Each structure stands twice: as structure tokens, then as C-alpha cells.
Amino acid sequence: MDGKVLDNDISKIVEADRAHVWHHLIQHQPFTGPDPKSDPRIIVEGRGMRVWDQKGKEHLDAVSGGVWTVNVGYGRERIANAVRDQLIKLPYFAGSAGSIPGAMFSEKLISKMPGLSRVYYTNSGSEANEKAFKMVRQIAHKRYGGKKHKILFRERDYHGTTITALSAGGQPERGAQYGPYTPGFVEVPHCLEYRAQWDLSGEEYGIAAANAIEEVILREGPDTVGALCLEPVTAGGGVIVPPEGYWPRVQEICRKYDILLHIDEVVCGVGRTGTWFGYQHYGVEPDFVTMAKGVASGYAAIACCVTNEKVFELFRDDAADPLNYFRDISTFGGCTAGPAAALENMTIIEEENLLENTVAMGDYMLDQLAALQDKHKVIGEVRGKGLFLGAELVADRSTKEPVDEKLAQAVVADCNAQGVIIGVTNRSLPGFNNTLCYSPALIATRDDIDEIVAATDKALTKVFG
Ligand code: PLP
Image (cartoon, rainbow, N blue to C red):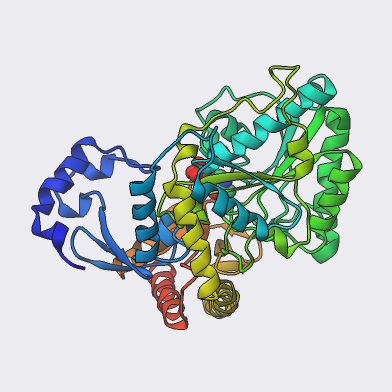
């Protein structure tokens, strides 16, 4: 760490933060004590896989900026330089006009997404999902007299933080106390085989879980359902990799009932699972793909709602009807820093073969976590794809009763104390905030993974014996 910030009076910065910053997703009461341990954490600097906090302590970041974001790691000067050059040339113009990086990144992105053709720029994952929801609703009005307007979402999935995105949220603790919600969103069952709702396994379980979606469609009336929105691999709801057979059946059902398929790649998008996009493991052909976090690895805010030409054609301007186009704008969707950073981010992934590294290191990490499961009976299941992994903690392997979430949090806190930042499902399903989460940057090495797994081993021993 170069110490520039620490040369200033860091205690003044901590005091300013404590007095004025409202942090995301955490309680603030613990910051009020006189003990320096109650100081809010301030991350000062990052390089590669590591970050340094205000006390100069080094941390190995096993969660890519806390929420699956910094896919190419910290300190990438070439992204910073590309953004700098672009900002000097042109920082912003409203998205009704094009920009050079916007056009160039859209071309590169679409080259990774056969079957899709149009990129709508926006600035957060929630907003990208809302764009798709609005398109679905507008299509319902244009083609079906407003009837085919319902949007299905899945138990345990998350699609964002705005009221409408929460209306499509399958995580009750995220949504609690923020209702009333937007009408027309309907939940379908989750597909986590470890917590199976049907006495089946493998492909049969996957098909049953998809058939459960069809049951909801039939119950609601297929002529009222416009779209199905799913995460390819569920993130915050417990790192859920769909079973064999699930996705092909989902695609069949969507086609059968003329339902648009919206895949939320906000977490999986741009390399996280070892392919450019999570859905590409399963051979499905979505109508909408939304993405955010890894698109520019957090170096600039950017999100995209990508559609196929079939969807785009429905919005082609008809001059005779002044409402016949997508009447939507995202002010900061016109920032040029986002696509400039995204273009460089994607080039780095290509040049450094980070998809290949993600597959190799993901397999290695899954094996290491499985070895940990042999040692610690509190680990009920390890699962994941690429560098996107989870370890579900249970009080009893035979009943699968989840551990008290405070114990899962104690494991995270102990890893933190050891200088390794891992995550845990957080304010998701009541009683099921019990899955440790790992999503190191796609540059992770065996040594990094060994360090992460060793810290977890030590923490599990400390908390559970
Ligand atoms: N979709 C998924 C799957 C997410 O995990 C998240 C955020 O964690 C979002 C959407 C919302 O993204 P944002 O926080 O950028 O609005």
C-alpha cells in the first residue's frame, strides 16, 4: 500500500464516515462504541486479489469486492487509462445519441452472445431488470391488449433492490417491510436439489422442478404470462446450480406457452462461471439477458439489458403511433466511462485466458471445499460453477437443519480476522442465511485458493470445534 491516505489523518476520515455515511446492507449500531473495533471498515486500496483497509491491514478478497464484482482484480491501469482518455474526450451524452465506446462495446458483447443483437445501456442490475420488465409489459399492451403481462420469478432468486425488482424477488428477508409491491409478479418453486421438494434426484429432479413452473403457468393462465425471469445459477439465495434437465425443459415450456425468457446474469455475467454467461452452460436461447457487476469489474458503473431481434422488432418506431417505441431513459446509461471500461475489461479476460483459469481454478476450489466437507460435518453440501461457490452449513447432516445464522456469520468474522474476506448468504430466506459464499477474482491462483480454504478450515474449527 502506498500509504497516501494513511499519511492524512485517517481518524478524521473514519469520523467523517461514521458521522455521515449510510453504509449499504449493514446495521449501524455497532459503529457507535468507543472501541476502535467498532470503527466502520474503510477499504483504501486494492491490487490483484488483495485490498488494504484504513488500519493498513491486508486482506485476501475471496468475494471480488464483496458482491461478485471485481472479476479482473484490482489495480488494472489499462482500464483506468481507457476511462481517463474517454472522459477527457467525451464524458457524457444522453443515450438517445450513440457514443464511440457504446458502439464498440455493444459489438464486442454481441459477438459473445449468439442469437442476441441489441444492447440497452443502463447503470445498475436492478435497473437493467426493470428495463426488461417494462419491455415485457409494453409488449403485452401492444400485442395482447395488456393481458399477457405477468412475470414469473423463482423462489430464492434476487433481481434487485427497487420496489419492482423486489416484487420479483424470491428472498422474503430482502423484501420484508418494503411493500406494497408492484402487482403482476408470481413466484415459482426453487430448484435446489439439496432441499428437494420432490422425492427424485438428478435429471428427474431437474425436470420436475421445471414442470413446477408449468403448473404455475397453467394455474395463472398461459395467456396472462408474458415472461419468466431466472438467475442461471442463483447467487444470494444460496449458490444454486440447477440440476441436469432443468434448463432444456424450462426452454421448452417457454416456447410452448409463448413466454419470453429473461435470464438475469447480473452475477454470472462476464466470466464468473467459466463461460461468458451462465446460460451458455445450458444451451438455452434467452430473449433478454441482463448484466451488471462483472461487465466492467466495478471500474465504472454500467449495466446492460440485451435482447434478441425478435424483441427489438416489436419496438421499431412506427411514426404513425407516437407511443410505439421504448419510452425509457437512464440518465447515467449515457456515461461513456462504463462501456470504455467494459471494453477493456473484456479484452483483459480474453488476453489473459481468464475463462480457462476460472474453469481450472473453480474445479480446484470445489475439490478443496469437498475435502473440507470430509473434515467438518457442519458442511452439508458444497456446490458451484467456475469461481462461484458455496458451502451450506447444517447443524445436522441427516436432517439438514441449517445452522444458526449467527454461527455462519462467526465463520465469516473469523476468516476476516485472519485477513481473508469471504461471504455468507445475507438477509435472504428466513432461517437459511447459512451458505458460505466464495467468488474470488478470475485471476485467482492455487495459492490464493489454498489460503482461502485454509482460513475457512481454521474458522470452522474455531466456531464448531
Ligand atoms: N440481480 C442479481 C442476480 C443480483 O445478485 C443483484 C445484486 O446483487 C441484482 C440483480 C441487482 O443489482 P444492483 O445491485 O446493481 O442493482
